Picture: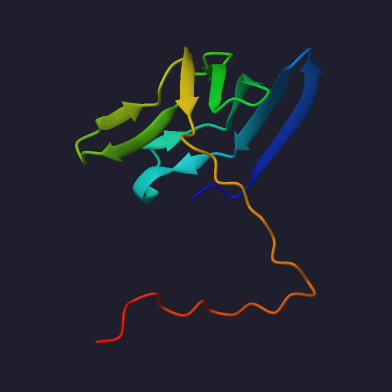
Length: 130
């Protein structure tokens, strides 16, 4: 577990015509990490930044996004273990990864709040009496 961590995120929403756009950026920094308490299985301090631009059309259930993770292509270890004979087995973290996403939200249920002056009652059952 690192002694210190820090993170920062920012969202900048804006509109272009009938399209709502959001630019999201974040940065996370982690202090030195010693995996398993062994001095050999160690990761020096590092920082990773990500960026997302998403767009939603007005009155639409679709959302489109362009994203890039680990923008600076920072090389760091996500896990490591010392084998005991002077070697370290390590799993590197993902390199820079960019892509696009499309999300469909299905039918959006419209919320209608209850009227503040009307008492909510159950309707009687319409089943015929036997």
